[in-house]
Amino acid sequence: MQYELRPGVIEFRSGHPDLGLLPAEGLLEATRIVVEREPRQALSYGAEQGPGCLIRQLRAWLEREEGAAPPVKRLMITGGSSQALDMCCMILTRPGDLALVQSPTYHLALRVLRDHQLDLVPVVSDDEGVQLEALEKTLMGYQAQGRPVKLLYLVSTFNNPSGVSLNIEQRKGLAVLAQRFGFTVIEDDVYHQLWYERPPPPSVYNLAPEACVVRLGSFSKILAPGLRLGWMSAPPEIIERCKKSGVLDSGGGLGHFTAHVVAAFMELGLLDEHIETLRAVYTERCNALIQGLEEHLPEACSWLNPGGGFFVWLRLPPGLDSSVVLPVAEGSGVSYLPGPPFYADGGGESYCRLNFTMWSLQDIEEGARRLGRVLHHCLAHPPEAHKC
Image (tube, rainbow, N blue to C red):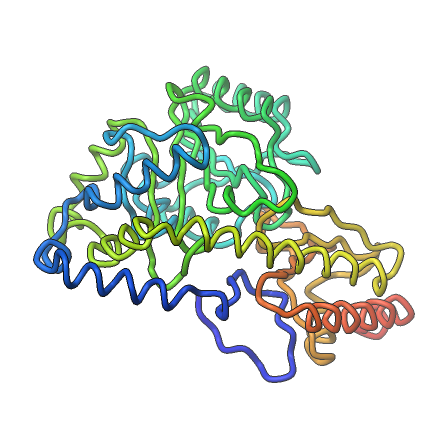
């Protein structure tokens, strides 16, 4: 979602990359190569599964990055991860079906799931991710009612908003439960390459290729969101059903010309170089935000230090509601996203999400300072009595 930045406000609320880091020159060079080398192929309708040039580049890149690449029959180019999620819901579910969701989870994914009129059930999570025992009990309870769960949606690595990553045993256990209870895991894995301390565990998809796992990837976080391009790794039968959708039958592959440009960008070796730049810059900014929170926020605040991704998930002092505090924060020149939208069943009032990727080190420090002043003020003047 695009929005205008407000003058004088440090917008920690966004989920955007730094627009100043977008590789415009490299994409211009890649575009020139495509137009000169393969104009007819790139400017025509494309294959429903995506152009072979990008599928080949993507498989080679995943092999280098992760040591494993999905077979061609398990890989599809999509219009970003949100479009892929929407398509999966369309072919895998019907209105009223049960869908489990990590809690908290990406708030706009909840909107996509609700568009399909699914019955959303949150899965208990903690500072280490999804609690498998609680998940198993939930699955057994619905199985006993004769209501099978159709899918589980989660952000497995550097969760949006919490920053939590599932450990390798949780990922394996999740795949076992999916096979046992017959549901599909939709693994939104758009931050997997943006690690700042050490690489994350393998994806659920890579750990359990025989389970029904759909892994979503996106060039929005690692290249440029305006490309509206991503990919999906999934069982062959799901890829085939997606290829046969009416939209793709009518219009061909999504983002066909853009896919050719990204393939050329990768062929030039520019993607690896760009991701390394993002890791270095975002690591520094993440550390700056953590340091700023430590220096300026009340002691009663708490957070997890993320190992990657875009966000710090901040817990406010007891008694403060992030939605109530927000107007005061914005009046003081700093903004964030309150916690409630990230919960399918309500809650999250004491949390807020802070983004660190868009701002300079100086702005991050100033934003933390402004937020600290607001929270100290609200503690001294409780919101119930004074509305901050």
